Length: 116
Image (cartoon, rainbow, N blue to C red; front, top):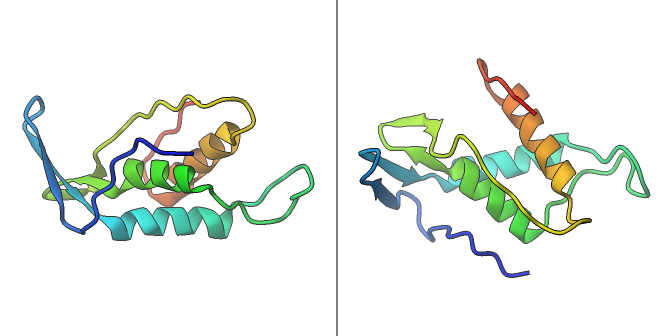
């Protein structure tokens, strides 16, 4: 499956948002850390893979990388994106992805509220 998510090929790439007046920086180390954390801590809870670690497809990894890897320049603890919209056909792991993202936000840092 081809992904339409643009990910820069070098660390420190920047983008400027003229509407918000903010500049963003690409942090592949953070993106990799998030995807690795999910792979290390999340397990399947039903079906033939019960108990096995969750392994993301390349498009799923790209989605999480884009979501967590872009940071506000100068305030790199702030993610660029606060909301995400994902629309894919049935059977592509949306529920697992949403659950993984919620668990990461819930246990990944302090002071985060997850609304589902």
